[in-house]
Image 1 (cartoon, rainbow, N blue to C red):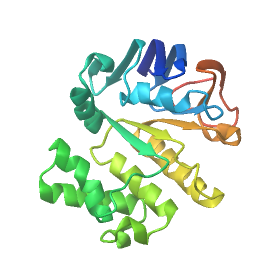
Image 2: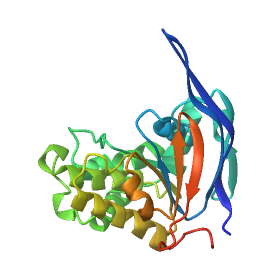
Image 3: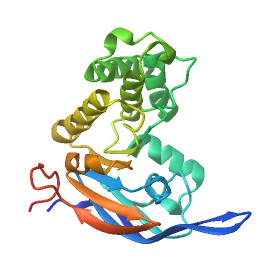
Image 4: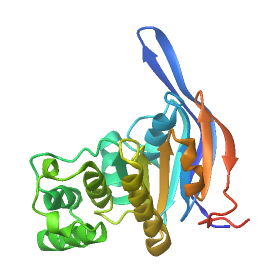
Length: 244
């Protein structure tokens, strides 16, 4: 069995609202194995996106701990300040959103170089070269100098994945990345993710409301009302990170 790259210990999240406290997550415990494609499946409001935001450190947990073991580091990410988490995330964890969140005034290649420039991981010339390599990986190199508005939604999502990979993070987290795409385009996105796992050894965590996608993951967890309910490992799927 592969080692755990992410561990959640008794993670809970409560939001204070005008109507009172809303419990989004309750004592979530889970291990994510290095090199696996983990799906977190649940209905709208089940706590999927909140759980993802606990894993990537975008939101602060109410109690518990999230430990990430990557690149010979063992980090309890919620002990860091917000700025420290943002810098850490820029280098260690790529985030892919359903709404793409590309900057509309920047070309595709500039959208991808931006995280590299902010993290100061590459010299300007190197960042341009890497951005082109990532666009080639996504089969979009001929669109490098276009603005996001001039490509399709599926192409924008592939650019968003390329941007998430800019600093070569070991982990990708994706929030409903195929939710607004047609089935053919969504299938292409899955093929990209599978390639990143098998060829580059990435670990990918994806949340979705679509139970029909369970067979595409090496392992899936079901969440409802902020609690993990069940685990599924498809018989016909290659399981990255765990042996049956």
